[in-house]
Image 1: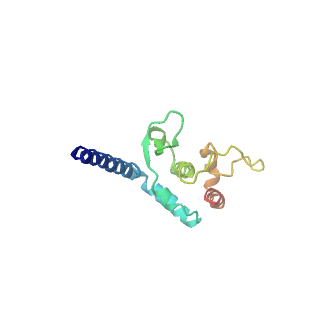
Image 2 (image 1 turned 180 degrees about the horizontal axis):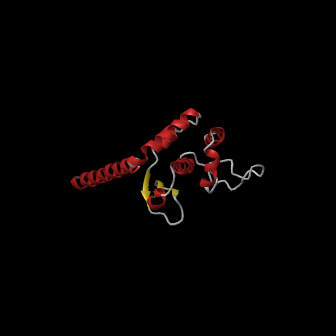
Image 3 (image 1 turned 135 degrees about the vertical axis):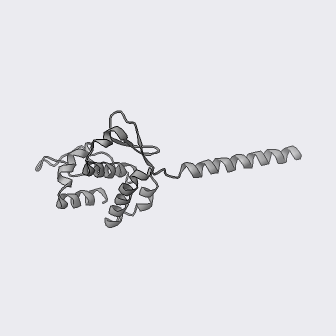
Length: 151
């Protein structure tokens, strides 16, 4: 009987440990540097009524090393290549962050089409997000991009 109690106690401890690890692993690590960018995405989400503010806030975002991209949505959150980030202008950074949250929070895939009438993509989810920057600079196009992203 004493052995049986020890066995149950060990099993309960394993469950408690597992739940504790699960709880801490589900918490998003937000590099404080990215907090203003994340807040801007949340603000846009609220403005365009996407309803996913909590999901956006729970996604991890941090600097790391990437081989072929400036940013990437991975299983554990968004990773931004610190070396390439240094050389980006502020508007490029905003577009990149919106694009990566589009993957991680909104479940959007890359888009490969461009609008033939203007020769440019019409979505921030274009697979090369920097190609949208020239249009994103103009308020009328920026609104269209944000509406399309958060639809």
